[in-house]
Image 1: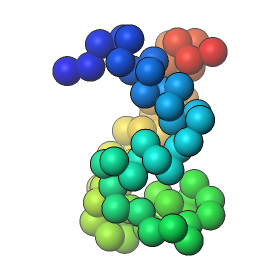
Image 2 (image 1 turned 30 degrees about the vertical axis):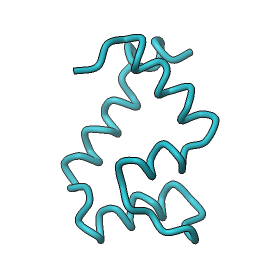
Image 3 (image 1 turned 90 degrees about the vertical axis):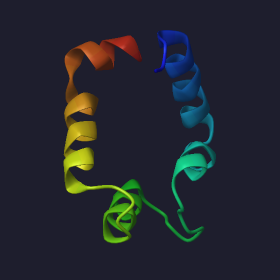
Length: 70
């Protein structure tokens, strides 16, 4: 389980270098240029499900979560 401190640290690392952080969890080829292409690759390769993408999008748009990362 993550605590708020580790989540904020991961967010900071993600802002600095998104590919490095995502590369720890996912197999992402070097040539991917856009976030949309990355999501499509992860879906096509079976590394994430559509439900996981939908859940991430809901979290991204949640006002409480957005306020936490301002």
